[in-house]
Amino acid sequence: MLKITNLTKSYGQLLAVDHIAFEVNEGEIFGLLGPNGAGKTTTINMICSLVKPDAGNIELDGLDMHQAGDTVRKHLGVVPQEVALYEDLNAIENLRFWGSLYQMKKQELKSRIEQLLEVTGLTERAKDRVKTYSGGMKRRLNMAVGLIHQPKLLLLDEPTVGIDPQARHNMLDTVKDIAKEGTTILYTTHYMDEAEMLCNRLAIMDHGRILAIGSQDEIKQIVGENRLLRVMGSFDKLIAESLPNKLKELALISIAENEVVYSLPVEYGTGEFLETLIKSGFEIDNLSINEPSLDSVFIKLTGRELRD
Image (cartoon, rainbow, N blue to C red; front, side, top):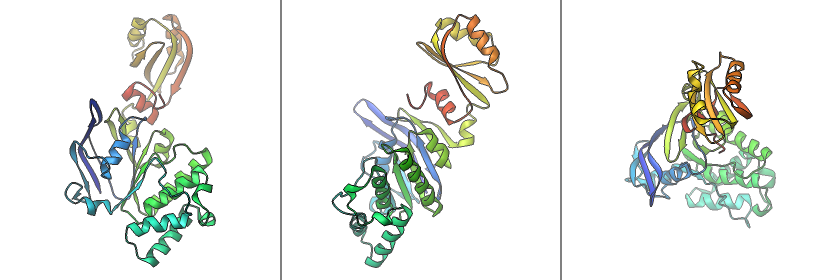
């Protein structure tokens, strides 16, 4: 459905998006997972024509964004990070306004509004002014606005940022319900659990580049059946770097001041590893163990945790 090829964008000396390529298949939830500043929002903005790329192509159902932009945009729904609603209007009035911009017929629009209010759980508050809504309710109405014209592809850019855990849970349930109805979704997030819960396939982004892409199982194969062992404390850097010479299956992932990360196959216990650390002069403040997961993939690819 969506095909991105060699997409690139710079802001002065900053290469925000670095020649990325991926495809989103019809009917799936495809995730862009990465920290703030990874290039996710810039990618979304280029797809919906808010930002002009320096290079690359964007196609939706075989139509080129550069050549058939107006036609392509009619099939896109966009839910930006910042809530885009008229707070002195109620939910129905907001949806009616945005639907009218797509020249929807009156009866079609009325039916669609009722449907979306039900899907997003806002029917009982539909006639209340938006400024009386909680953050989570505003987020759900913002999503309804993006869906009002029944787009083929919905772009969701960090839709759960800044809302409480219960509202976040409701939002994720809403996303899953929308996907079940057949809407294709491109979902950006810096929350690992959201990617694991929602996405059929995903791409891991950092510093404008895609580091890995595929299904969750395919991406987890990058670390194989390995644990990641993060050691924090005091140690000699040269000794830390040479530790894999003492333990055959141990591999060094990254090293920084007061912190070193190793990988070790899951079939090997951590007792021998811990004993080797102590004998090598490590003064350990903290030892954390990550089982094979998207989080361990991110650490292996970038040398740091996603929340860093």
